[in-house]
Every structure is written in structure tokens, then in C-alpha cells.
Length: 119
Length: 454
Image (cartoon, rainbow over all chains, first blue to last red; front, top):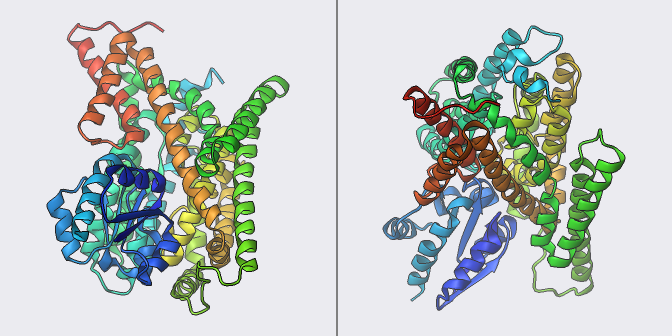
């Protein structure tokens, strides 16, 4: 079971989008940056998806400080491809930030890639 | 207010006050840009909330200037060209995205300490002279799309009023949201009836924000009580040697050590706002352009609550503060009667903010619903402005070009959506008006369009 936390301005929308995909083996929980940082550190969650206007401020915020930039990545306002996400996951990235106005495009690609890792 | 707009659109010269504004305003922008680039170079402050988290690694030497610069460029470019530039061009008023995002970048990239303020000042000069020139030129055109842009103000003012009710609906559900909406609407109608001179949205926004904060604090306190009652709660209590706490206190101490620099920064930003050549929020540029500084102050004051927790937590997590602090210096600046007062008040506000930072962080750590509220507020601000700016853009389109104007502006907006939002959605409307205005002028020269007589 992969546990994904969401945070930032669009946290409930992202959770809704992922739930809508009906991916097996994925649990998605609405959280916030501070609680998520603690949960990821303690191994009580696997990934964090954050959204905000820049794709990094409220999306990553405290997480970069606490978990280190090595596990955090922001797509900013760009829409990544599955290959890009795969490469980032291979690097060990677990925290992803992206912009609110690209939410519809980014969430499904990202969620499918994370779900594929579970299987 | 009807007679103001034409004059207010001439840029810096339009603001009235004790100093000679064309020169004083230009010098303020250039000097402030030098200072903000210097602070970004020292990793003491950046404007972009998204870049701030990355400043910690930079500070500890775990990453290079170039790499951090790349992050800054990636996160800022869209906002400089997609939000700051179209907003500034369409309102004739400066904004933080156009002024401060490039100085973040230049300051971070500058390889030498002395080079940062030089590059910052150069950017300041580009902004003041470039904007003034572009603005004056645009007003000379047969189809004056800048005057048409003043149609933006009404939808912004009235729709923005409802943002607390939207945030309440999303955070606390339909019933509280509906109650807040009805209370706000009643207050708007009451204000229009009883105090026609007061901006109708002011009491409604105040009530809405108070309701939201009230709901959030009540929820957090309730949660804390139940947590204390059930001792063995599954939610683990935060231990004293929490890494978050030590990270936060180290950052707060670093910022306090540089208090004089921050006071200078606060003085500069407050002065810029006081000169009425600058609007701090997405909505405010159009209000400042119309000379409605009291309304602009209210809009930016309430907006600040949406950003305060974000700025506080990112500053405490990274050791770099915000260029505009908690943005309270904007509304204070708009309202102050003289530039000298702005310098004094700006410095004092920043001193208080920096000193209070660690306390604010501690309080916010225990109030998750309040932090959530601020995110909901930012989401709601985005939603109201999106509609207001789109609607205002179509009004402006109609004013400058009738049906053809609406076709051009609405069409460009839709095209941007279809192409994956090249321009940030908030700015897509105003940017479409600028492009549409240019196209109408081209059509006029080709003898294919007759300007509407207003």
C-alpha cells in the first residue's frame, strides 16, 4: 500500500482527482505541510503532493527544510512526462510540488507513476 | 472619482504629494531594487514564496548560486512575463512580480557581492523608464486600451468582497459557507444604504475574515481539548527535541541578527506603496491606478491573512524572509499621508515582524486549522480574482472594441487555456486585453476597424 499525502492550496482537489482515478494499492490522505513532513520523516507516509500558485511555496514549504532538497522536486508550472517522473523517482524524490493552474494535467500523470511503483 | 482616471494613468507623475514624484519615484524604485537584489544575494530575503524553501540549502552551501538561480528562474519567469508585465502595462502601476521577482533572480545569480545591488538598480531603471515609455506610448494610440482597462476595477472590488465566504465553504462546509455568504451580502447592501461613502465591501470582508479565523481557532482549540482528554491519542504529540523547532529557532535568530537591513527594506517597500506608483496584490494595481487607495488598502490588508502563515513558515524553515514581509506594509503605505511617515512606519513594521517571527511560528505550529484557513483564503482569492479579471477584461474589450474586442480578448483567453496556459490564468485576461488592444490598433491602421467614440 502506497500512502500519498496532499497539502497546499489545492490539497482537497488533488486528493479528489487521485481518488477519481481509482488506482489500486494507493491511499491518498489530505494533510498539510507540517504534519506531512513529520509523517514522511517517520515513515508513516510515502509521498507528498503539494499545490500552490508557484508550485513550490506552499507546496513544498517546510518539507524542503525538514527533509532536504534531495527528496523534493517542483514542476513549477510545467507539465512533466511519465519518463521525467520515473527519472525523478529513481533519484529518490518523494515530495512533489506543482502549480494550481496545471493541477488537472499534472495530478493524473504523477498518480499513475506512483501507483506503478506500488505494483 | 470619475475625473481621476485619465490623469492617474500617466504613471508616476500623477501621484500628488510633498516630493517631486517623477524623480523621487524613479529613485525609490532603483534604490529599492538595489537593496532587494543585495538581500537576495545574501540569502536574507526573497520575494518568491516558492524560491524561499530552497534558500536553506543555498545558505548551507549544499547547492550553488547557478542551481538556485535556475530554481528561481523556473519558478519566477511565468509570473514576471505572465503576471507582472501584463499587469503593469495594463494598469500603468508597478507590482511586486515585475519589480521583485527579477531582483530575486539577479541577486542570487550575481557572482560578487557588489554586483548584486548594481544589477538590481539596473533592473529598477529598466522598469521605471520602460514602463513609463510603454505606458505613454499606449495612451497615444487611436484605440486607447489602457483607459479601457479601468473597467477592471468594479468587478474586482465587488467580487473580491466574497472571498472569505468561499474560503469558509471550502474549509467548513456548505452551511457555514452559506451563512457567511448571507452575512456578507447583507453587510454590503447595508453599507451601500447607510454609508454610501464607505467602500461597500469593507465591513463585509472584515466580518468574513473574522468569521473564518473564528471558526478555525475554535476548531483547533476543540481538537486540542479532545486530544488532552484522550491521553493515548494515536496522533503523536510533538516532542521537545522536534527537528522543526530547532530549524525554526536557528532561522529566527539569523533573521534577528540582520534587523537593521530588514528595517531599511521595510522602509523602502512602504515608501514605494506610499508613492502610489505600486500595487501589492493582483487586484490593487487597478485600484491604485484609479486613485482608490483606501479600497486598495483594505483589499491588500485582508489578502495578507492568506499569506501570513505561508511567509512565516517558509521564512522559519529557510532562514530567508519575504521581501515585502507579511505584506502589511502595502496597505499601511497606501494610507500614510507623507513619504517620511512611510519610511518610519515601514521600518517599525518590519522590526516588529522579524522579532515576532519565532513566536508566530510557535503559535501556527499548534493551529493546523488556522494554517489551513490561510490556504483556503489564498485559493478563494485566486478564484474570485480569476472571475473578476476575466469579466473585467471582457468589459474592457467591449469598451475598446465592441463585439470585435470581445471576440479578440475572449478568444485569446480561450486560446491560452487550450494551449496549456502559457500565461498564468490570473493574468490571461489582462494580457489578452493588451494583445487585443494592439491588434485593434493594427486593424485601425489597415483601415479595417473604426475606434468606438466614447
